[in-house]
Length: 475
Ligand SMILES: NC(=O)c1ccc[n+]([C@@H]2O[C@H](COP(=O)([O-])OP(=O)(O)OC[C@H]3O[C@@H](n4cnc5c(N)ncnc54)[C@H](O)[C@@H]3O)[C@@H](O)[C@H]2O)c1
Image (cartoon, rainbow, N blue to C red; front, top):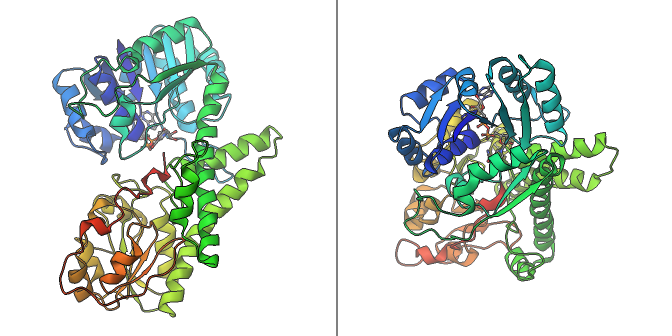
């Protein structure tokens, strides 16, 4: 089928590339000319594992094109809207990009169009879109509007798109439902050739849930808010553990063994960030407010999250006594590993707090430094974790990149000023680090004092808590 995708960000690019991969003819429209030129020249504007290869394959097969929004609108019978919906100052989702696309569709479409909201939007946006399209439609063209919320996670977007556990659509007409079923057919039956795995980890067919548009829109906001609530919940449990001397890792493990609770999203840390959870929780609060529903539970979720960075900075203060003039190494800037996205990343608030207190910060992130440079002008960006740690009074772990799990502790010990690691993501086992001569402070666990470093060298990778990742902290 000929399909258009509007917006070439994390969601739009993944959607366009994966729809081409499963056999559709896709035209992706992007209004940012710099980004568009990069894409047309085969240059990736963002980092996302596997995405570059899928885009290359789609272009080579002649099934993936990039161009203007107008050309995209003229192309497909189905149009996926994947533009940003950032928060306004009052927490509402800013829908101006969505409205702009609707205006263009009304102006440039030349026949029936199925307009699909993939961007995360407040409930009843579909109804507004329908009204807007009808009001501005030329030549009496007809439209269907559908909701198709996206659940992919940055860092594994291609895999998540191609092997989802569910596909949710909100439709108000059989025609819209049939078209969406046709579009997703190869994914529903997992019958495409997978660009990521030779043998896919889960060939289970996803559940295809068709509902009304309002419910589909609510499913996305309710899901993200629920996951955010789980994170804030375990973060409060971590605070309690710190006071009473319990271990939050064990508590989370014990809780997660209950299938009604489940183990995911029970990793405490420095708080959730990214372009989804913070803004989606805010938007959901506003939706409830405007509907006169008292959802103050979510206000607490947000407040707890906002206090996480301050809680972490308090640990830094407690260890360093005076922060002014101290050299601090920050490992990780992206809001989670395997992405270069720093939007609403806890690292930004953390950096500001440390700089305000007079520390000098040397930071390293495997992928996010380019994007961080524009938002964090007063820190030194380093070539690797050791470069960042040179002469440091403390090493702070802010994003749980795998690279940090391979730390050569002997080397690190020889270059830092003070052997102190403060870990905002509980990447390591306290015993492992302290045996390497470091004082180790983490989240919701007892602080570990340095013990005698071993005669040799590189900590065994097994000391790192393999698999204990907070990467799921954001969708
Ligand atoms: N990032 C995620 O992990 C994720 C996951 C699920 C859902 N979402 C939702 O998907 C939406 C997009 O998120 P994202 O992270 O991809 O955003 P993004 O900022 O990375 O991408 C949006 C793109 O749309 C482009 N754009 C804006 N107006 C346009 C127009 N009129 N024509 C063409 N292009 C236009 C922008 O230039 C930008 O490149 C948001 O609503 C977000 O909440 C994001």
